[in-house]
Structures are given as C-alpha cells and as structure tokens.
Image (tube, rainbow, N blue to C red; front, top):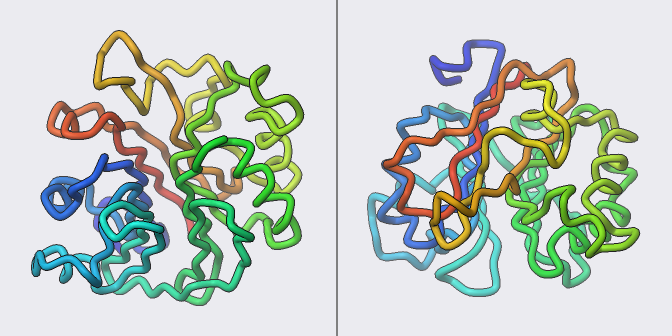
Length: 232
C-alpha cells in the first residue's frame, strides 16, 4: 500500500492523460497511488519507451488503437487479473479483479458516452455490488440529462445506488450532481470551460477521501486527476 493511503487502505487515481502517457507517467506517479486508471494511454506492450513499459509491467490495457486506449496499472504489490465481462462491442471498459478480493471496472466511455455506460451496466448489473468500484472518464454530467432520454447520467447514478455505490466526490464533499464546485475537465484546455465528467463510484462505508488535483503541472491534459482513498 502507499504511505498516503495506509496499510488497510488503497489509493486509486483516474486520469485521462490526453495521449503520450509515456511522457507523463512519472508526473502522475507523484500521487503515490496503488492503482492508476488511465484513459487515452498507449499500449505498453507495443510501446518502445522502456521506462513506461516498466511502469506498466503490472497492469492491463484495452483499446482499438495501440496509441490510445484504457489502462489499469498496479503498484506496491497490488495484483490484477482481467475479468471476462463481455463488452458486446461497447467501448471502453476494463473489468479487473484486485488482489483476488474485489472488482474494479475502469471506464473510458465512448460516444454516446453515458448511454454506452448505461447499456454496459445493464448487461452486467448482477456483477455490481458494494465490493465493486467503478472509476474513470464517463464523459457525462447531470446537466446533459435531457440529451440522453432514459439512458441519462441521473439514471446511471440511480443504478449505482441500487448496487450500493455512490459518487466518491459528491459523497465526500456533500455536493449535488450537476452542481460540482471543482471541475475534472477543461474543454479546449480553457479555464472558462470547466466541467465535471470523471468519477469514482464506491460503497460509502469504504470511502475515506476524494480529491481533484488542480496542480498546473497536469495542464498537459484537458483533464485533472481524481484521487480516491478507500478502505479494503
């Protein structure tokens, strides 16, 4: 476990790196997580960057293009195994078993974004419970509910609640969906176009803390890292 999280805890980070993660993994490593969920990263198996390959040596990756996919990378002795949850051509989802103890679903929701996740969740609803963590870039917010009809952000939040899961940020900070005080994304990397579209859903009894890192060093992406500490 990381010193930041503690012996009976684990630190998770999700960050859409906006590509070229081989040049950025050392930056996010400063957050001292046990698990990194990284969107838009290259496949470490085909990347020639040796240091990145070493960083990702205890990880899993999925994607359609070798230079842009979804990875889950473990540190501090954390073990991962890929779960056989059929995607049915839905993108991009990476379900993993962590330390043979609990399940993590990493997400980078492709268009139509939250609708893609909604369908995937419905297919695998029976696998979602209080020992599951859903984390990643959902490309979604309650403010856009009317664009998605029944398969909306609010509908997904309700399905999470049925599984015993809450949004870590909203639970930790007492904020309402759609009224977030801190963004995770800056459209066109402009400070005047902030949105909250990255999430972690966990059981409330496991949640210890949740923060969004606004350090300018992460301006190499249009997203900011979401850091979640959970109890094991």
